Length: 152
Image (cartoon, rainbow, N blue to C red; front, side, top):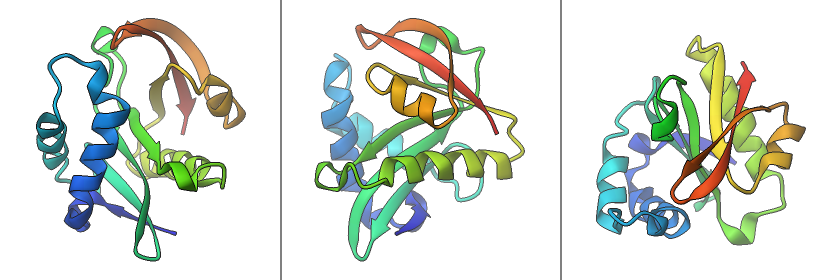
């Protein structure tokens, strides 16, 4: 499996936008596939935040994640964030999500970031196994989410 900045593999933009919209965008009244697509186009970096990564196995897109400055509006005091972590459903439970999280932490470290944050409503245990610590709970997209941090 190889990881690339989405900017380096623009042919995957449409698929990533669709995944993110179907997973999270539909939960937000002001979101559309077009707004998700346009937001992803703003991730123009290759070696600094904000950046979106794509995971490719052979010629198949298998996952994605972003490193971004801010995620839930309620915690603008925390930055930067790991967000939009998504693994294609047929590729789940094969370690890809763990690989992506580990890569995100290593990338943050290479950018001289000391702490990285994320929020999740369903995967607290998975992140805890990877060393993330819960620090807060907030409402985001009409659900309770746990905010976690990790020292890089």
